[in-house]
Amino acid sequence: MKVRIGYAAWIVGVVQFFVIHGIAESAWARPYSWAQNNISDLGNARCALQAAPEPRYVCSPEHGLMNGSFIVLGVLLVVGAVLTGDALWRKGPAATLARLLLAGAGTGFVLAGLAPADVDENLHVLGALLVMAGGNIGLVLAGSGLAHRVRPPLRRATALLGLTAITALGLFLSRHYLGLGMGGMERVAAFPLLLWALAVGALGLVPGGRGGPASARPGRGRAEGTGRTGRTRESASS
Picture 1 (spheres, rainbow, N blue to C red):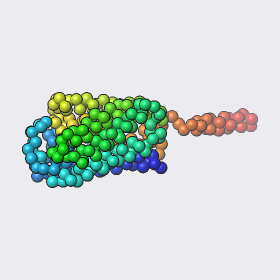
Picture 2 (picture 1 turned 30 degrees about the horizontal axis):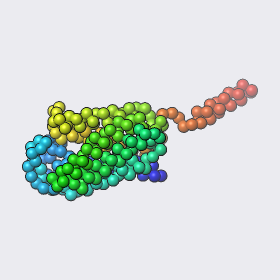
Picture 3 (picture 1 turned 90 degrees about the horizontal axis):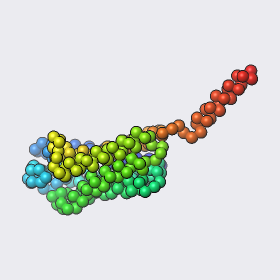
Picture 4 (picture 1 turned 135 degrees about the vertical axis):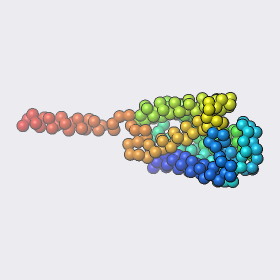
């Protein structure tokens, strides 16, 4: 039961984040741009011209709602990392560190919500690094830390998402946006973790899910084989 709560926590956390993201950006008088605005701009408490990392005017009427969403997302990411347990993770240092880093990413979202970038920039940056550096390293480690029952394609996709996001973080910090804009590259660094949590949570709640067991349930094939053998023997004897 607690495992299902963990999966559901991930789904609820990510879905509410994107819903409130849409509500907060739609409240801007000047159009909010996924390419030109940071995610954190939605949580800034004051209207002002921001000079770094790229000049833009920020004024988010629903900043309180957005910061609350950051906090809810962070808490539910931690809940999921704790409760999914042996159902999703194998035993060993890679899995343990992956779960710690994913929980740390949840803590980073909480910090980002409690300390908007224009209120306490240092604490906000720390939260962002916990998400985009620590969380994405956790994704890479999760590729080898997920349980054997999780299908190999999902394990490989998990590691690939982490590597993609880490690369995007490096490009974002070096201001190489590859045509995506500052906000676009930041999203490539931040969103893979959320999309992964949403996908794994959904698969975990589907019967036979958790990325799909790599093989049939233990004993099922033998039972069916025995049944077929028994029928064959009965046919031969008749």
